Image (cartoon, rainbow, N blue to C red):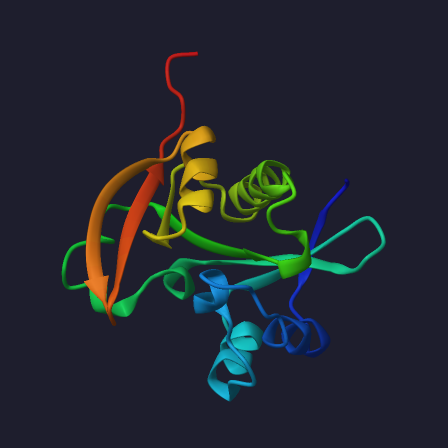
Length: 161
């Protein structure tokens, strides 16, 4: 499944805000949130499109991928490229995560000229954590915010090869 990265548009932002995940992943549902729409359009968000040009997912980088509460806790002190991602609900749980995450990593590495990454994930999202671990991410720290435990995970470049 060839994927491509594209600029976030109003149409893609509206589609993302209509996504509805099943429990327990409904934690990620945004609904018609004007603040989130504005963030999708004005911050470092990218649309990920499938081979037919349809929205498959999205990713974000920088402060958009951080939880502000954790900044003073030191969760983001190390100089790494923070990123976040989301996949269209109908495509989750079908074994497409590895290709999706690999594509996002290669795309943002090229855009930002970086090879060291950090992500923040809700600890209950064991399916995502398993995928991140398979692709070389390691847990660094955890913190609680709004009744949810989050963990940060990092992936450093392989050296000496």
